Image (cartoon, rainbow, N blue to C red):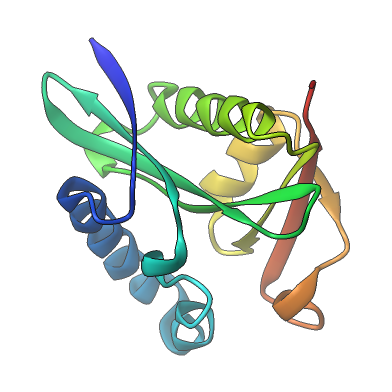
Amino acid sequence: MLQLIRTTSSNSDFIALVELLDEELVERDGDLNSFYDQFNKVESIKHIIVAYENQKPISCGALKEYNAQSMEIKRMYTVIEQRGKGIASQLLAELEKWAAELGYATCILETGKKQVEAVSLYKKNGYQLIENYGQYKGVDNSLCFEKKLNL
């Protein structure tokens, strides 16, 4: 049975999953990964969800305040052998619920063009492509998305 646990960035299971994510991103993005890495430090992220199947950590995601109205979705990852089962969609919905509970109206996010599975996930879950924001402005490899939350 899938369990979604709200936690903090000091959670060791979250840290281990993020290490797997970073390894995969280095493979996909190569030299570009060092640019993105500077914006993905987990120490500054306070709202983490780790998904467990039979007490084993299999997926994670995080929320980071972008501004007074928006939370940014960060560090989404599902272990390879668990992909395609809808786990990331469930985790994403829980992140959105948490953001709404905290009073935010919107979730935004950035993903790379080479993360085709992520692009598909976000579109399937109602995210709309927007102009690149913040540090991603002018970055050709980045795609930015937004979803208005039901408060």
